[in-house]
Length: 129
Image 1 (cartoon, rainbow, N blue to C red):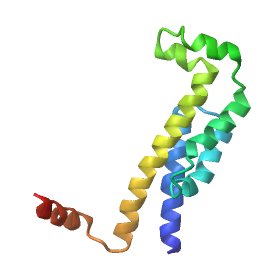
Image 2 (cartoon, one colour):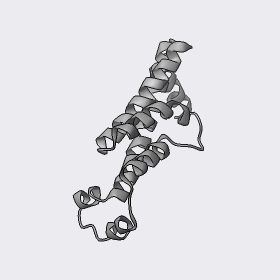
Image 3 (cartoon, rainbow, N blue to C red):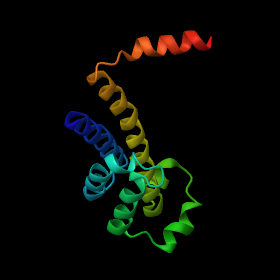
Image 4 (cartoon, one colour):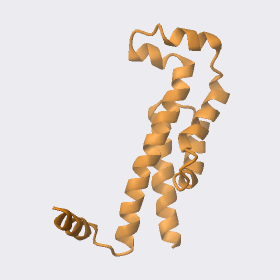
């Protein structure tokens, strides 16, 4: 059971933090995603990206000017220069990382438990089709 918890923590937290870093978020936002992703992936009412996004907003402090200038951005690179968009981008990529970590974690935990996932999927597909 401890091994399963470790797998869950590493994959959900690690990939969520990786999402923050890919979004060029603050290291404290990445640390936040790492620490909360294992819990937030077990609860459908909260998301790791929300926490990472709140920390990012606390660190870079978007302004009303950022909100107004977001609509006038002509390219994705211009959007990335906007502090408000960066907060949203950090939250989104953190959530995507946590989601990917959930699927990878489930797969590895099942493998660790000795479940033959490929055979199970073949059996399910054979019964459906």
